[in-house]
Image 1 (spheres, rainbow, N blue to C red):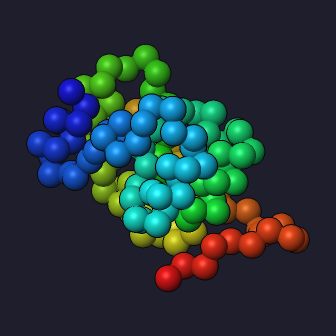
Image 2 (cartoon, one colour; image 1 turned 120 degrees about the horizontal axis):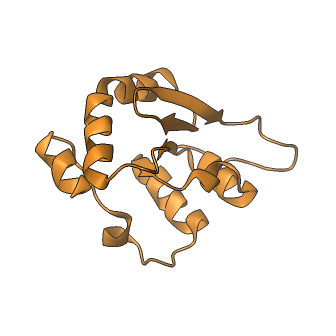
Length: 127
């Protein structure tokens, strides 16, 4: 339902399971998403709190949006994304670095941004 509504609004969207197995580790699929410069929409609020996944997201250069509207249906979440799409695109354009933003009922809020590269860690070079 959520994908149909988003497609009807003119967005090109794809479910995680179309490209990846359900048990694909975050580190693996995030790397592929980063290489393809896709934007991630997720309901997994813990992705911003788990160090391994957060590091993988930043290392891959991913821009991600977390829906923090648990009590809403897929259709309602799709309506929120459509309503806020200009703000979503604006955030993508204004933030060249990897980030995670929260999508709330009426706002898109930057949550986490790419931390400085720690000594000994190297980010993959962008082609």
